[in-house]
Length: 162
Ligand SMILES: [Zn+2]
Ligand SMILES: [Zn+2]
Image 1 (cartoon, rainbow, N blue to C red):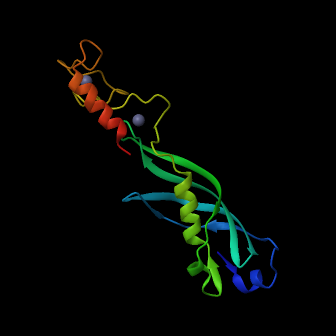
Image 2: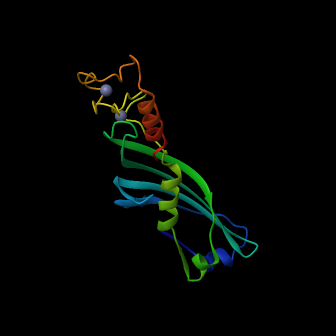
């Protein structure tokens, strides 16, 4: 998917529109590679204004993630719509390729800390039990009885992980 920059330049101020599906199986995200299921639905609007391209991109896709609390796999539905910066080097050629902007739109739509379910109970930092499926292991005080302040601190650190 791409816009013809010659057409945009020769009709300043006019809005051009593209609709379609793009296949982006892998998405780089903060040092990880996320799998994108199926195709990404894309709507894009571009116009030439004051010597620059004004670009708006709407994307809908399904991205495989891990729960921020218990590491269970989940599929996050991304639905984002943004005006994106187009740099002069993006418009150096004949065409404006949309793929990098679609990837940027997906990244902007991703949650920082996706959860497998509302209120996921996560993994106990003391005994390692997956609290969605099991109780604390014998001897663990993570259940609330006399919580050790060291573990409260560890829990805080876990919460701060991206
Ligand atoms: Zn979870
Ligand atoms: Zn525990």
